[in-house]
Image (cartoon, rainbow, N blue to C red):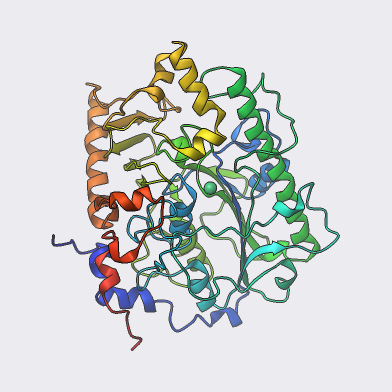
Length: 497
Ligand SMILES: [Ca+2]
């Protein structure tokens, strides 16, 4: 099929690839004149916008609330996948996981699969700009980082590709001060299951979504999730203290976000807001000139995709966004026009095959399901073992104790299309695909078209099914038997002129 101009899949292998590769070359040298900011990414696991500053009850997050108050809170930030490895592959490259064939969860753990030519890791781009890079695991002795200090800085990468070489220069906090400017990240564990944080939230007071049965099991589980976030906050506080202690607080830009949505039955692994909506807080330090769009102490409703973090950081670091990087710059002098849409995708997760694609504007979410013959509760060992509500739903369904909204999750099939008005229905429970109202028809047609255009322009690799044997092997793919390999892999890598 001929591909349109502007389609990264079509251009990557040709002249555009050279542009993608070379735009930040030669390395920016202006940093010798102007002080460049450090960047610190604080990456939480599996959490939705459940912080005090988002109005959540029974969670205690004074440090993140203060960071949001001094910085900016972005209330409409979404990952491109509702699960770790595709999402992390995307935000660490600024590319949709569906374009770079990293869309199945952990499918390339042991097959030597590498990024397509011209697509690079965040640290590669930042090194070109003179940055030292770190994925922090080691912290100074004697510093109080909370009760389970081993969980601060997991070093998690979980990319669904192999990176040959050293992706980060260091894992030691103590290296930062002497290696500025730096781009460092800290990966936190707390909000990943199993939840193990000290109990604090009162299960009888937590607010649970209407699609879960109001049952002690649900309440207890939700309280544990909130407790995990409260514990995460104490660790964030400790890291913020370390920045102060080492004199780094005034020249370090902080991004706080999560790698995918909340670890609940209809959250993680699914393409509703609950699987893709994550908190985003950006803190801007006083020692660095502020981008024109930055308004400390405010909330922004601008649509942000997690693949926008990297091009934005490159731009703020004095570089230029690589021409074909799919993320958009949302802060700084080179900011792109704000997004009208954010996109997301889910493909195979472990042994469970689904294919969803979704697009959302500031109000409506549209989901297309390519596997509607499969049930929402299609067997998944991870969810069965770790999500008590997964089994509770099945049990209460057998007893006839679910409401119609809850029965949606135990139905034998799923809708082929879903449309939700997140303004009037934030939990996305009323599917408007059949609605005759003109505004719903308009939203449906517009979002269907937006999705079709995105699928074509981004060369969605999910259109090629994985061979069943590979899916059955739960990720043990062999490249020679995997047809799910974009044509761009077969093009020779670019040569520097
Ligand atoms: Ca995750």
